[in-house]
Length: 77
Image (cartoon, rainbow, N blue to C red; front, side):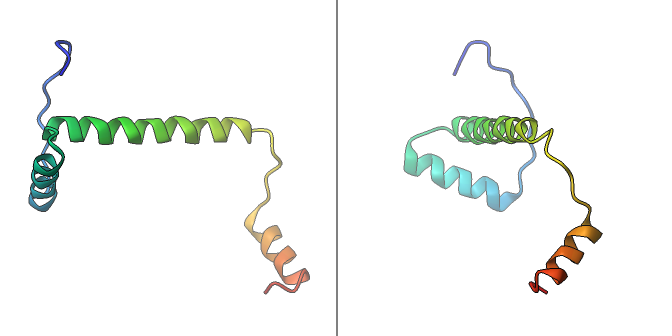
């Protein structure tokens, strides 16, 4: 753990806490490391999502009503 690490109080569902404890034992990684890795992965996914949103920002939008009418016209519904 980095000397710059910050302490936080996190309240976990008891079953999730138990799963983390078991995974910690099985993988020889601390619960703290498991949580940090999970949060890091979630944040990385958010970065990917934001990049995808940015790439598609200039795409034309299609409202629901028009989309459903197109599905009906095409025989999909």
